Length: 176
Image 1 (cartoon, rainbow, N blue to C red):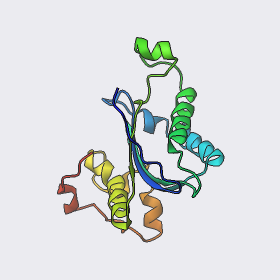
Image 2 (cartoon, rainbow, N blue to C red):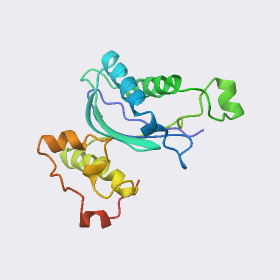
Image 3 (tube, one colour):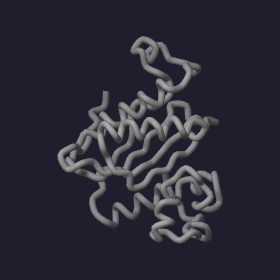
Image 4 (cartoon, one colour):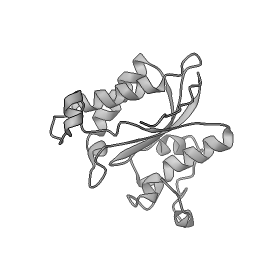
């Protein structure tokens, strides 16, 4: 088994990518967006974190969150979010024998991508990446048209203009 190295930084600001197990032709996250929002809210009440940026796509999500100064345990938060979301859904997914034996659901990939934000430029790049993602995946032509994103909050605060990434920027090669 690989030795995953995570950077545990109390009060850190992190970028995450979290994927569903079955990503092809799956819209589970947006179909059950209210459940996801509710579960994230419950976890935030018990184990606070600040959401800087978040986008939910049909089969994965990206976010930038900030932990409290004395806390570095993002893993527990993701475990609770994944578990809470999974428990709220009916058991209709196909399970591998390994997952069934472990009592796991077949909804989320076990791992996730995490990156500790280094500086302001890194923060801005990841926030832009989050918000451009629905355009990159061909879900909308303009960022403002995707409803499951914190882009709208930042737009209201004047951080982004309404036409941000709605033109020639779409031709850039963004990688997931």
